[in-house]
Length: 244
Picture 1 (cartoon, rainbow, N blue to C red):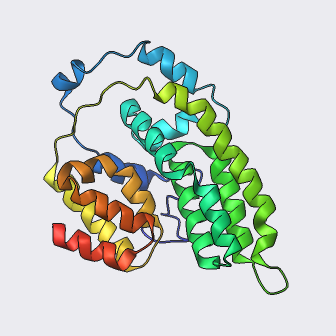
Picture 2 (cartoon, one colour):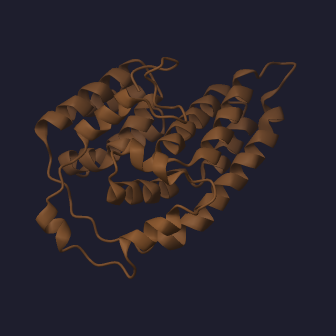
């Protein structure tokens, strides 16, 4: 998370302990009394997560480990993954057709990291394959030759979305988190460092800390989210500094 290519990077299938500590430290504090009165789902959490455990392409244990065992937060992030990344294959196809090598690399890298964090291992592996392919693109090996890798990735994304959507539609209402100022400051400082380095790990950190950032900054977090999703890191850094 603290730099591309280093052992502390979270964009790997196995999430290092340092990253787990960061996310645990930065996780929003949920009021357990409020959470107790949240809407009751139509089937028990135990049954729901037993079902998630049987989804092909999802390593539930890895996803829970990445988020310190927080099941409600994992469900929330899986739903956000579908909202933000289900159409990534189409967007990357457009980037390939336009010959935008750096955009393809950035998109594949960000998808790889988020998917690995949430335990969506098949998608993470295929995104990594696409990223490697894009990095080797030359005049003799044009970017369009990566379309076979993209096809496999598109199929994996569609497959995981088809399985997850019916289950996530039954998600219980999770109360808005209270903001831990120390945790927020830590996340903001780490995000600023990544944005300053033009590091795509910023996308992964924002995804992992989305609930905390939205709780702290409200609608302004939407602007920051859009800028990071579009890799407009310079403007995102300016927005982040204006909020703190």
